[in-house]
Image 1 (cartoon, rainbow, N blue to C red):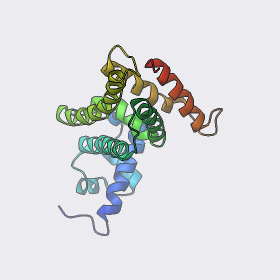
Image 2: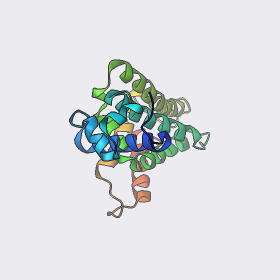
Image 3: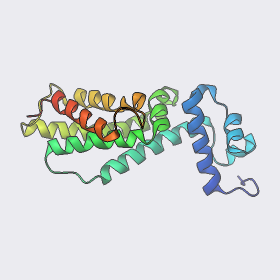
Image 4: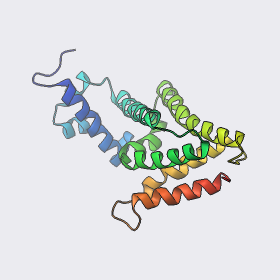
Length: 196
């Protein structure tokens, strides 16, 4: 399919994704039309289909891109050998990464239900990889006797939910600095996993 004259896929494609991210986060996936996305980008609605097959593919691309960025960033983190220090690194990483991407985080949790089953399965596998990284840290800590949790998988879900919750209330320039938040959350996480 030919591109619209004067368009540039390396410019228009990212603009479409950015507009969709903004609109999905503000209004919800179901309430946003391809026409609204086109209007936000400044192109004709039909031109969107030169870049993306449909709205479902657009949502999937956003969610997959977010999870791939998250995993790539985590896997690039320099990690200490001991589980307790790795857990602290995870806590601080998760808070920083997510606070920098509030719209992506919002749709990653709120719009999963709108994915087709095949797309959902792909995103779920990516999420399991990230959750598995935390579960491995907890398991290693249990094995070394420095952490104590009744169920490492459940604990990893609970900790990720708690850490992601920072996005709902934290505002830069508020009462607590980002460093304060990281320090306090690390203290709460450390205590919740029975760190010795």
